[in-house]
Length: 375
Image: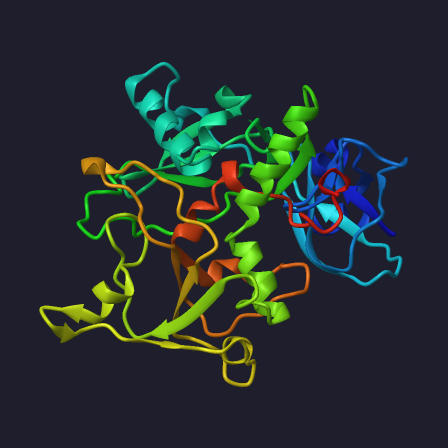
């Protein structure tokens, strides 16, 4: 069990006191959402009394404890759970309200275009995305960035996604999410953008209509998990990559094919009969070695399932095994047993695993470790 106490700045302290005084005389902060990011563990707008919250039944591992409340900045704190009870006092800081003058007007042509691009970048374009919907889409505001080419999407309220494909509803704290109107297929090399999560997520179970839907969700969750980044990270940590049908290689160049996957080994090695790109098998131990932090690009091949057929320009489809490239923006990788990996912003995920970073294809971090519905 883990117990947490949260204190927030009340209206009076904000109005009459400076920063130091506000920290000295915080008021309690009821009705906050307190959860472990990207899990089903947490409380939405509940409290044990006087701004105290208790989370229990947490499997051992590392998590991002997240606290959000309307009018305050989202607070995210990495915590280690090892079975011991602990208490934390946390101060929430008021969120600066943005000017409404810069907001793109709803019902304008630009607004509707931004909504389409946001949905593509946020929910995705996979089969699961077709069965997912943002319930409160019009709570999202768009503002132009200084570069004149990109826009920032934000919302004062959590965004709620209903994912009928996997049987979850998902709440997402959307403080800043960049929307780029560029055509991502304009480069001949295809999909070069990396997939990243937009903010702390909390998962809840949707009620099934019948037993058939329970069976379908179980099947689709397994399919979403197999070959995902969390599946890979857990297998790498446990030393079970080969057992779980993963193969890993390192190489000195990355070239991504137009189908969104790295090119096949033949395409990598042979061009006009010449060896141009080389890759070499690498061991799990070498990738995880903290004394010599791994920094090469890592090629991952998952052979248990074929890629989902995603229609691309020119009626091209993904072919071959699921392939991914992880580019290390900073050397080294640290993974915990539950699949949590440190500093996710240090890795650019290109290729098939990148698709699993969309909201529509994400699963709770604890899946399938302790979900009763999967047993």
